[in-house]
Length: 572
Image (cartoon, rainbow, N blue to C red):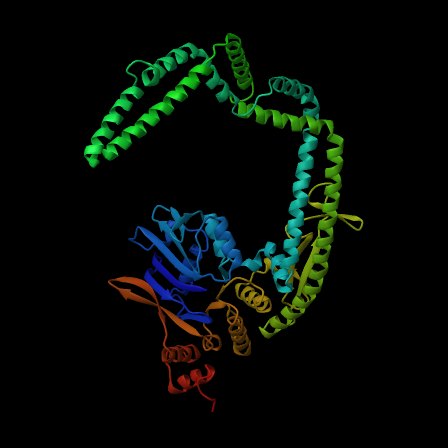
């Protein structure tokens, strides 16, 4: 639901801030007052094109900002998550256009591309009228609408999962076949590398261990001499540290017998003696183990040298060498079992292709049943909306594929059919609004007012399944009046039970059904014209509906008629 709209320095609008409510929102105003300017400004945050011409004269930039309530809009929340945009129950969208023609887009204060803003807009608002933002006039949306109406999205997702598996297997098979000659040609070379690496049998972390051992052997004499000297200094020499500590300890114990305050010092000294004794034992043991073995020294140097050569050939580290060995091992194994792997993948591909075809067939069968119901219901709605003897049909066709083994082709009966994102059906709505004329693709219908009524009929039928929360109808009342206008109004009112419906109208039969009514006016201030928008109170709404019924001169009879039309009083 559109909750709030702010427009600054856009065309005739200097500053406009509007709080919206749910239900049927009506916008009225004199011709040329700027109603469509508001819709155009809203189109900016839906990702439509913008240029510097829209900026109010004397301003540096135009800014349009809107907040939408998004709870329950799963497709939108998924898109926001994929785009890395934080989401909650309310989404703030802003677009800025500078006098230099530069455009900046923001969602929850995070900059986004125009493409992302357009994607978000398509999941928030459906705008019908003299605008491009019309989902029903994009043939690629027709299958999704039909599936929504029939509750087929579960099967569609099942198909997409199966198709992803099929495409993955097909890609793996294609890549494997592409590499067949390369594998055969390189197998002998890989085997040579494997023999070279295996002959060394390198182990992860081996270098560090060998380098540590080498360092010790290269310094064996120094280690032996130093540890012998240290042992004598600590324990075995004349005036050793250990002997001196024993003397100090004994004297401290004698003093402690006289003054107990020396007791702790005596204990500390005894502890120091124990530490020195333990350290001396460690150094003595180490000294006893020191060996000088020239053979082992040469062996270590040779091993480290050969490991260094191996590293230089295979990535610079032992880890990269081992990773290379594992990879080429798999390649050699694959080359040796190539036919077996190909056969296994081909069998998996055919199984997955059969699975995709079966799911797509189920989808197609159900779509034909749903299409008949939709066609009948829409014809009835169009008749109510003043389009005499309409004909509407949902055409479902399939496209044959020239490929037989590609990931987007399945065998159905005697045909190879091309897959798409929703099965193998191509769905398109066709319509004829005049007796004797052939049905034409809905996307080629040209009349703005007629388009809006067709959209209204379609939305009325698809209302419960359509996920777009906001529907905007501009100029829906072109060419209708009387009973048809009343039918249009009641259809809009019913539709507003499922969506927020915002409608620009000149007809009292539609305006009188408003849950919320705004009037757009132009005012002159300081020699400049500005468009404003005001939310009407109930009495002001009665007055506005009366004006739509009888013109500028509103009479008591006109007010009474407006109240009757709005259901505020019993008709006389």
